[in-house]
Image (cartoon, rainbow, N blue to C red; front, side, top):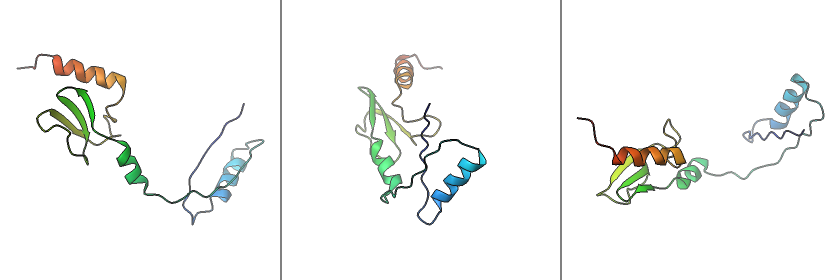
Length: 107
């Protein structure tokens, strides 16, 4: 059985040395440690760009807090993706949202 572990370290960190210490400390046999540089990127912006407004029903949207709602007349649930609620893209979340939208509100 092969297990692959990928770790990212800041450039100024001895990532290779840390990896070798982990292998030694946990007595991992047959480890093949490699180190490859990764281009720097604005990771936060890339993640934010990947979350777009999501239409659940004709008049119900889930909108990331940094995006503009696609339909100002619709019910727009503004959220921070990844925290508690996730992104709203999971099938069970979509089903729950559709159910709640069609349910009779509590008095």
